[in-house]
Length: 146
Image (cartoon, rainbow, N blue to C red; front, top):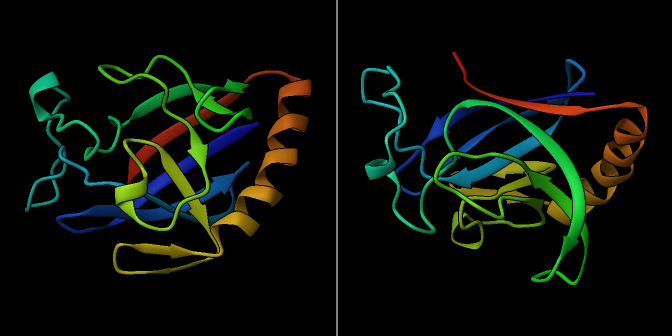
């Protein structure tokens, strides 16, 4: 299974994008502020000093996604592996960047710094992810939108 997050709308608080599964639009995404994106649209290479704890989107790149038990959520959740300078990055239910701490939220509606119907999006996504993991690796690619 191939997941793709395309960051499109950038503010001082968040990055809202499109989340695709195997090339098809699935939902919107919400993350903390993208500190790599520059006003001219260029992307700075990742450096640890770009990170502001709990307020920074993870670096652009390609990651493996698994599921495992989350002590925070007290259930099995998606986990994004090997994120430079971050740990415990998950895909979970959220509506605002302040709920993210570097993680990715999915939603069926969007506005500035907000996604809505996140629980519905996550509950639809999780069984698809589990099925994808049964078939092999699940890869997430994070890119900049046009």
